[in-house]
Image (cartoon, rainbow, N blue to C red; front, side, top):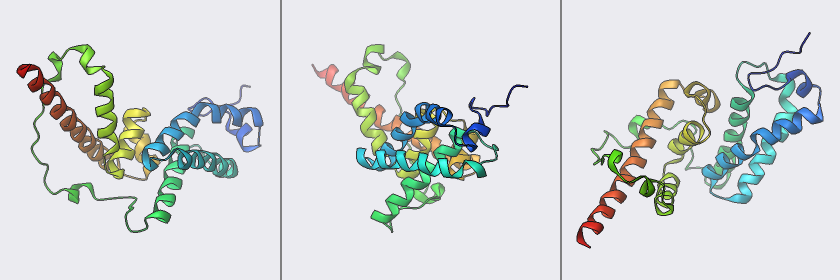
Length: 202
């Protein structure tokens, strides 16, 4: 009889009994995504490497208590997020909240000018300059929005999985994701409008 696998395709029984090959496969599968998540949250390569290492150390010690109610990916992201938040609290104890009330952050949603991107040249959307502008805009997001955006849009987690990883409701994740996307869209809209104005005056 074949051994049941997790939704990620891993053998939980092997991980629980310390199978080195299965653990190595898990590390290889999720290291890059966890590293980028930590890097986005902490903006420091060494800190991100430390969080990556600590995430898998904590996971290896906690496999026996993992019941498989969520995917291994969601579980690992939750560990990584918690480790990153703890590190942030140590450095700036008064500036980090694990569950900021998004609805009260800025008051009512400010109206923003959004250009229609459908008619912009594809090469402009994919240009190096545009990518740099987008990266800067992402890095400027508040941590509460950045974490959700990274999990959902950069790492491809579902709304449900992101909610589980962050210990939030699905509604809270959707709200934060909407705000993150609107802020990014506003930043890029301003960039495209400025680019269009420059071209029109040339």
